[in-house]
Amino acid sequence: MRPVHLPTTLTLASTNTGTGGTVTMPADVDAGDVIVICHGDRSASPSKHADFTTLASAGNTNGAFTDSGCIVSYKIADGTEASQGYTGWTGLDAQWTVSVWRPDVPCRTLTAQDTASYAGTGDPAPNVMDMGVSSSTVPTVAVYMIWENDTVNGADFGTFSGDGNDPVTGSTQLLEDDGTNSIISYQHAQDAGGFDITADIGNIGVQASASGYLEVQ
Image 1 (cartoon, helix red, strand yellow):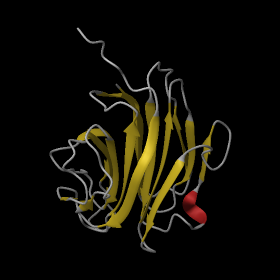
Image 2 (spheres, one colour):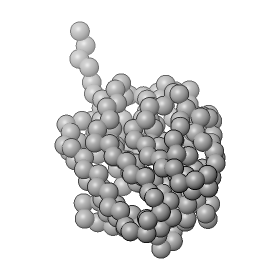
Image 3 (cartoon, helix red, strand yellow):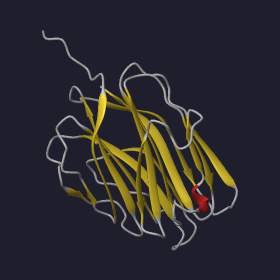
């Protein structure tokens, strides 16, 4: 019997960002890649396409014009996803980011760990969210996202820090901002070990955040 070779490294192969309820995959997606989608919109109950699994989600009900929700979802690519559009996410004031992580050996299994979520209420007090990643002996992808109904480039963006640094050192930042509603995601891949992400979110305007990490095997 041949030995089973597991992934040992991860590389960011491609990304994409956009608005609305249809998420379009990048052109570069291979079978065995890890696809991560971060989506935010005005929904108290965030939804997704059936092909994807939820890593973490958050939503609140503050009225028709202030509901906020976000969802992080993922799947192992089968090789048919490149440039395809996936529906199922709520489209009202929606923004999204997609990242494709490529292991040196095609991924067979993804395991979610240390998930967390937060749904804002409009209270102007800051909200601190800590994403503590447990040590792992296999490659991992850490994901942290926030959605809010004001520009993330404005004063209410808050302070994000990774291992005591701001912004998150060693991570990939993806942003989609239409000037009124915005999404930002931080993602960090590592061969093994732990990576902590802390976010001090200025809760000005309704917003939501979600985080977690994926073990790639």
